[in-house]
Length: 428
Ligand code: ADP
Picture 1 (cartoon, rainbow, N blue to C red):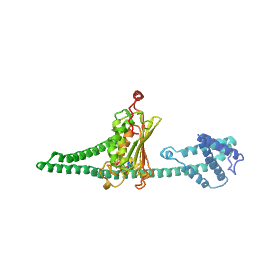
Picture 2 (tube, rainbow, N blue to C red; picture 1 turned 135 degrees about the vertical axis):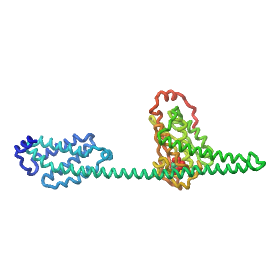
Picture 3 (spheres, rainbow, N blue to C red; picture 1 turned 180 degrees about the horizontal axis):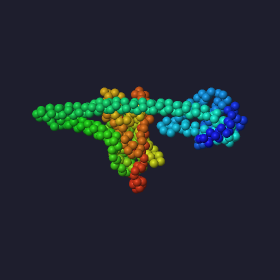
Picture 4 (tube, rainbow, N blue to C red; picture 1 turned 120 degrees about the vertical axis):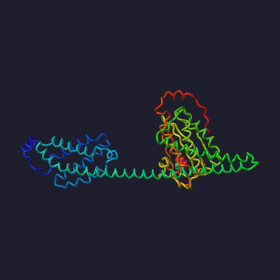
């Protein structure tokens, strides 16, 4: 330190009077050096060139007597360009940038000026650098605080929504369980009464037994859905991987939904799409369950006489299935929410236990289960709809992307089965 002090005093530094003569060259080199070190791609370089030039030109104005706050708009612009990644990172890109700017200035001054003049000019520039460091640190802290508080309020909103959806879920689950339970109780009472009557024909009791059986089946399916959701939630859903052909799955579902489709006067068209005959590795039971939930919803949220279509295409390594309906559609704001567990749209009190009845409700678990199953296969699911409109029925399209080969499985297994030609059974 003492050596440096001796050196600087021996230079007999004169205070700076205006800009040094070679300022034009210094300025050009300062800009070029900074851009070379910071900018990697050509597009970033052009933008950077502009940013650095602006700063360098303003420092010249300051050296000629201008106030330091001339830098303010420039520094504010730099700070506003901070991205989410910058705000999440503990390192500061702006400080690093300033570091490069300062070093490049020093290099340019040393190249073009006598050591003494270089030092004087650098000293004159120091207030600009200090001011820039201070202001940038302030901007960055403010931006980080705003980012964190926005993030926190988002988390809070999510927690509130989760809390609300949990209590909604309890209300819906209680309602959903109560309906079939009431049915079972009612038919049991009728059966008891029937049995207590002398000369009761056993044929008269059959509808009551059917009613009890239906109620029990409905109860079982709701309880199974609840168990599935909790398995998915805890990542405990175990899949029994084996070769699957989508055309087989849809042939089963087509038969299964035939009575509901007929009752609702709807049309179900299952296309013989590319990829529907291809073999993919998956759990057939679980995939059937996911597609069943989606078709069930398509029927449920489409008015009588509407059309449901299953189509798809083969993509590299994936098969995409689309299920399109001409139903009431889904509001864009709700399109992500419907896949969350415990959430469903509409009023709890309006929910009924009609499986395929128009707008008949359920516990709101069908889509979270479908999503959980598809994601457990390494796939993804999303919905497209212009919006919710019960009058004009814009319809919805659910997209399901499933990898042909689950990453955790050996490719050879699929290869062996790929050579087997399945019997095509799609409807035309
Ligand atoms: P549930 O049908 O038991 O209510 P889901 O999880 O299957 O639960 O669906 C959640 C919600 O998403 C439904 O209540 C409905 O509002 C909306 N929805 C799902 N599928 C469709 C569809 N094809 N068309 C319109 N709305 C749909």
